Image 1 (cartoon, rainbow, N blue to C red):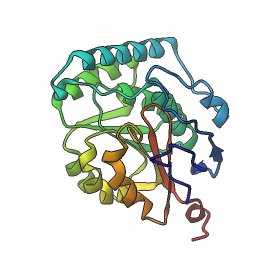
Image 2 (image 1 turned 135 degrees about the horizontal axis):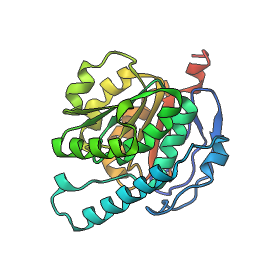
Image 3 (image 1 turned 90 degrees about the vertical axis):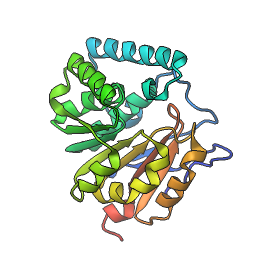
Length: 252
């Protein structure tokens, strides 16, 4: 099992294994990536370049800045956007491009900022995305942003409580899941998330910024011998969970 990030010392982990059995070593530094810092070296690490467009990049920049400004003055949490950082968006797009899942599940749509990062990678190999959001006004906002980005045709936005949706999913129905929602419910959702993840990858945001809130969830994941996991200091911290390398290799 890959070493988990040291919650106290913020030291290093060993490897993240992606389903094509490419081992990607990443050296971690003792700091969190600032919210406004990009990671241009990631395409070099994975040997893969995400196809960028000026229009999409400009839209993403506007959405991110608008989200930061709105959250700074908004006291009503239901109206806050809680967007991921640009660095996290790049990281998600790269993982999707490398793992090439046919179906992607996002739990926590907000205004669709993270959804656009996922979709720009998924478009290259005709993958589909299902994105769940509990608040109708955020689904409406996301729909408009996805239409502006040109990705509305590959994303199904669903306004629903995540527990309800997950319980109705077929086994192994998604190859990639991005979790950025109500952290208090992650442990309750875990059995269904585990059940529907088809030998794929789970990425969870806020693994460093809200480490205490995720501690029980990490403990549950760590207790499963069929999974590898690690935390990367990208954005607010990304918990990456994959099927254990020896399981994928038929050794267990």
